[in-house]
Length: 104
Image (cartoon, rainbow, N blue to C red; front, side, top):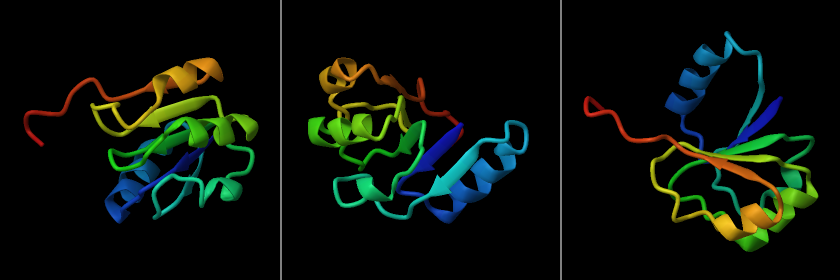
């Protein structure tokens, strides 16, 4: 599985690389947020992983669907930045963290 991870900070990269040793996913990191300006850079990606400031609206979801993306994973508890109806329309799964750690 290939994952495109957006709004990636160095600590994200460090953590995901460490955890990924158990899974072996192919992860492509983007420092920029997900939006129409970067969709063409996504190739053969199964999932996108976004953060709270990534706007995943209907236009972005339509473009992701055209690239055969199947999953939108959020690195945040909130999901108001994702058009859930558009995701449903294109058969995309959306997942998020259930809550934040009280020790974070």
